[in-house]
Length: 332
Image 1 (cartoon, rainbow, N blue to C red):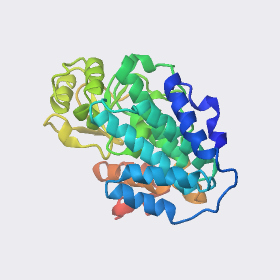
Image 2 (image 1 turned 90 degrees about the horizontal axis):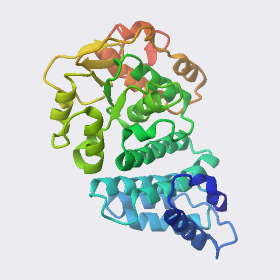
Image 3 (image 1 turned 45 degrees about the horizontal axis):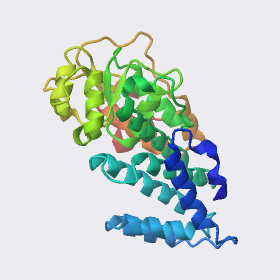
Image 4 (image 1 turned 90 degrees about the vertical axis):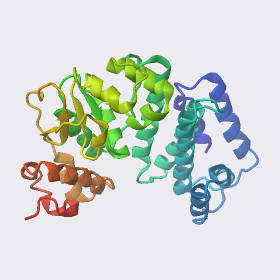
C-alpha cells in the first residue's frame, strides 16, 4: 500500500487533497506492519453493502481490510470503483458536498494502481475511466479548450483503443459524438483526445449534461448554444451547423426526429462529409480473438455486432471474426 503513496500519482491534485490522501492511507497502514491473509469473502460482502445503499460502510470495510491484506487485487479494484461512484455522485448532487470529486478520483487512482500491480484484468481499463473523469473536472472548471495538450492518458487495452479509432473515424469534421456505454465512451474519448486523435470532435456526455450544471454550461458554450436548453434541444440546435454522430449503442431519442444516415459504425444527423480515407481497422480484435489475450474482446465484439445490424456491409470487414459476433450478427 505504501507503494501507492508515490507523489507522481497526484500531479493534478490540490495540495489540500493530496495531504488528505496521504493522511487517510498512512493512518490506516501505520499500526499494521504484518501482511494478513487474503479473505475472498470481503469484497463480495462490501459489494453487497453497496448494492443495498451502504457504500460508505463497504468503503470502510475495504479500507480496514486492505490495511492488513494488501495483496487482494479484487478488493483494491472494488475500492477504486466505490471512490469513482462517490465522485460521480458529487457531480450529480450539485458539487456541494465534501470531499469533492478531485479527492475521490485521487483515492480511486491509488486503489486502481494497486489493482493493476496485482494483475486484476479489468484494472487498466478502469484506470482509463478514472482519467476521463478527471478530465471532466477540468472541463467544468476551465472549459473544453483547456484540455488540449494539458494531460496524459494512461494506457488503454489495444482492442479498446482500436474500437475508439474506428468509432471516430467516420464522424464528419467538427462533429459531436455521443457514446452509449462506458466502454464506447472511454474508447471514443481516447479516439478524440489521445495521441493522433480526432481533436476536432466534441465527445459529449448526455447523462452529465442533463444533471450537472457546470458541465452543461461549458459544453453548451462549446456547442454554441444556450445552456438553458436541455440536451435534446441543444443537440437539435447544434445539428444545424455540425454533424451529430451516434455510436452503435447511443440513444437515438436524444437527436432530432429525422432519419440518420449510416456511415460504417456510426449514425449521423446534420451536415458534413465522411473524412477521406476513413477506413476501419480490426487488427487487434482479430489477434485477441486468436490468442485470447484481452478480457475486453467480447465486449468490443458486442459493439460491432450492434453496428452490423444497422449496416450489414460491415460484415465484409469483420469476416475474420463474423462467426463469433454475438446476437446472430453476420450469420445467414
